[in-house]
Image (cartoon, helix red, strand yellow):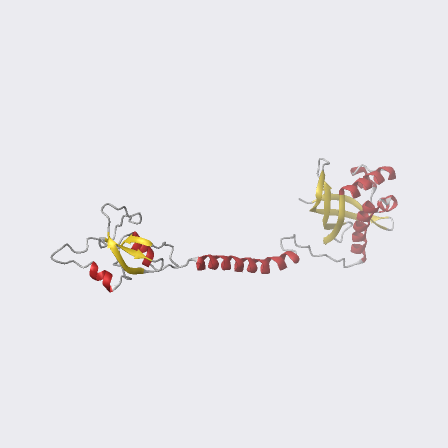
Amino acid sequence: MSAIAPGWYDDGHGALRWWDGQQWTEHVQPHPQGMPDPWQRPRTVPTPELSLQSPEAAGDAAPSDGGPADQGSPSGIFVAATAPQRSRTWIIWVIVGVAMLVAVVLAAVLIPLAILGFGRVSAPATVEPTNDDERGAVEAVYEFDEAWQTADCDLFLGVTTERLREIVQIKDCATFTGQSDAFTEWYSDYEIVVTDIRGPEYEYTVATQESYIAHFDQDGNPIEPGVREVVEYEYTVVPDDDGWAIYDLVSVE
């Protein structure tokens, strides 16, 4: 559909021709002297001759009696009216289609990975004890963790040596209970995995990876929501009475 309204326009041959909104007609009239042509625009290359002129129009414009031939190419209205109008909306649809395809592919790849825990810290391999001594040493570590989470002072005293209690400055149940309550307030979802057992000697070294959700930072400021953290420890476990007890505990950087 043409965007040029019906009207009289310069036909490029010194006359005005009627444009009916769709095509050129056979109606012509002399070009008024000095009439401005709003469609005329500078051209750096010749414009092709009007392809839709009727034979009569072409005859009217032909030179006669030695008069000058066609002095120029059709004006801008000719080019605008006769050039085929090509829609470029297909380009937009191609771009939209490619974007949608990329989104679908990313969703198909990333969503399953997110569900399966993509980006998480890989769970360590659990090392199982191979004899009774190793089982006793590992059990002491698990009971130490249970004592802290349940505020069980008797269990704490049973799986720790006096030396360790001196190091951590917990010498009585009142102190232990208060610190255990603070521990369960600061940390939740505590998990412990044994990653190595070294021995046999007089003592065993039990290496662990322990994870938890921290609800406060080191300055005591609340963290909302909590942050999952992972630490590694090495427990030195020694025989104690009829069982095993923790003699030392260090954090592994």
